[in-house]
Length: 109
Image (cartoon, rainbow, N blue to C red):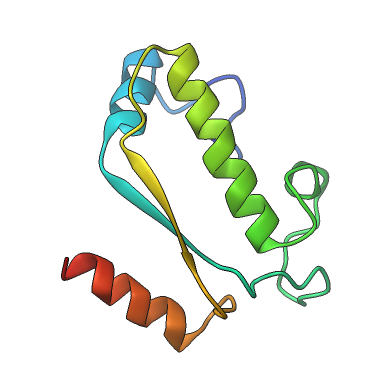
């Protein structure tokens, strides 16, 4: 779901009673976006292919990078410091032990 109040849920955050202050708080929270650099199969059978999804990129890695950049720019436009950081798991696919391992390392500091 995009942090976009003009797009209705579940594609965006519109229609569920949120406003710009909610977006600022959401973008300012501490969050790690963890992506696998091998999660790049445009033919994955469970990859969403509707128009809005395809506009974000041909596979999950591209879409994750797109989403992070989109939220970075949105935070700037709203005057809030993005509390998120991007982590890439080398060699990791979509459902992969390498993702879980790197996630555990992030959580354990």
